[in-house]
Length: 452
Image 1: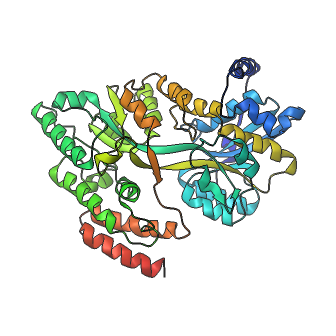
Image 2 (image 1 turned 135 degrees about the vertical axis):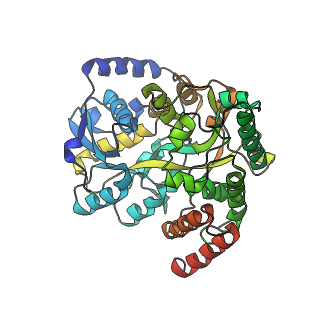
Image 3 (image 1 turned 90 degrees about the horizontal axis):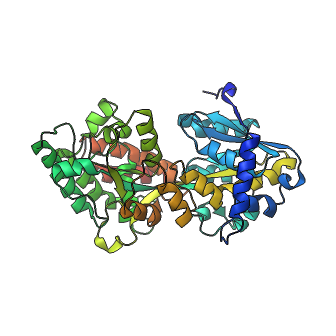
């Protein structure tokens, strides 16, 4: 369904906010920094802020009422560039790619749009729907993660502003009730399975039969994402050689069979949400993306989640050899410029892209619980200063230290392969087929329907 233009928002910064922000930025400019600041963003790109000419840019976002990152980025940029206004257009999160693709084709898309999933980037880039922003990429910090994924033949087409990774969330209160030690950052998947079993048994012995040791959501990524990150050999995913996924499915099914996590069928039949399961203390552990940090804090504030002692640790590893630099998976989110933008607004749009990759923007995102593409000590300080955040060293280690592989390896055939694997996931987790047979059937289907 086409978005409702009545939901379009104009985000204006009050004069008092602009004045205060200017003072803060002035104070910050006195220190050394290897990263671009919002002030740099204006001067380095020669944007229209320097000329004083009023410019209005449109930006595609989604679910503005519950997704504060677009407003945070727009507010921060406008505070440093008061002659530039950012209008954020609200799209349906569930149909974003469809709607933005239709708007680009119709010539009515916003000046700047979010590339929500890396997997769709080739579609936009190959379709000529992203402007060359290599000059922006040349200015931003080399520490901005995942920028290389948006470069094709030496040309950069989008700039990442957030880079989610997956953590192991845990409820310390439930662990204490069960008499089990909380994660220590050294866990293998075998340790994780044992803890899920022990916590389930310990809680039951303590009279809590409502909670289980773990909650694994129904998404294919909760199995396949880790298999791709930790179990895949070179090129196996894109060649549909997926035998490496079998052990990950066998472990997930074993936890179901033992009763240490909710059955896949119960999740889908009862439409269980991961927010509800972990946030209302139905599970002592949950492996989930970093975006859940902001979600949980927001739900505690709204009363939709309960307040308890919590933290997050690196996800379990195949072996302890990677514990010092744990391997997880994740997905970046980027923004690019619509090539149909009015030429007079291009420099302002590039200044905005420079800003979203800056340390100032990263801190603004961290302050609302979003994991930015640029992470350093200042960003970590901002993240863990937020009310309700855990204060332990392991949570900070999980935030700052990890090797993040792509959830789905990038290639022209990736969307088709993922569709086949999505069907296999449902069949395996529902018990319709064994992991060995389900993956074998998926490999055969992928080679005949997608790769042939």
